Image (cartoon, rainbow, N blue to C red):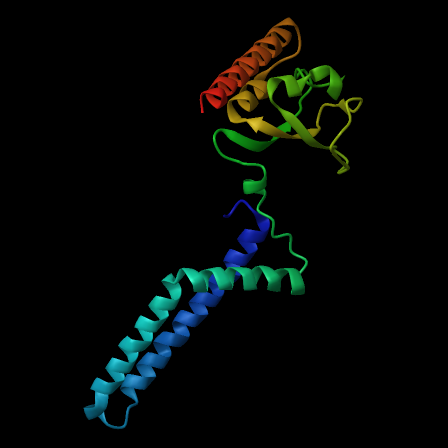
Amino acid sequence: MVTHPVRRRILMWLMLLANAGLITVISSLVLTFISAAKLSNWLPRLVLLVLGIAILWIVAINRWIKHFLSHWMQWALRRWTRLDVRDYASLLHLSDGYAVMELQVDAGDWIADRPLRETNLRQEGIIVLGILRPDGAYLGAPRGTTFIRPNDVVLLYGRLDAFSELDSRQAGSTGEQAHQDAIADHQQLLLERARQDAAK
């Protein structure tokens, strides 16, 4: 929830509104029970309070009301705001070991100073979504001819275990061997998934 900027903003406003609403409810209840002219008629007020809380509880847990409010909020956000309310975690299926990660490219890294095509990261199961240059320029969906330079920040999508290895991979023969090993690991993973799909 807190990693998504739009959700974080909505959550912040909901927390502020909830706190304001809670204070309002508490102050109303205190004023209702304390400032009553006759203390003898507290029982009907208590029954009314319990009834109101019960109605609020039913509304809060009702599936149909939640469904209606969810659709109404989505419509209202599209109608009156320019917020991007898409759930990118669901769109990218950020679970089961898959994630989006930023990789800082340093001089001497395996992917530094070479075109994207030459890295063959797709064969490792890693997709380059974009490259942020040190001057602030962003290259979305870069081509194979795009060079990855030191001090770039590369936005990647793939398996978390592949990211950790790529982040520590250095240039040279050991880096090339690690690349070949990563390709073999990914091919093995694809074969296992194909077997699982065939067995279903």
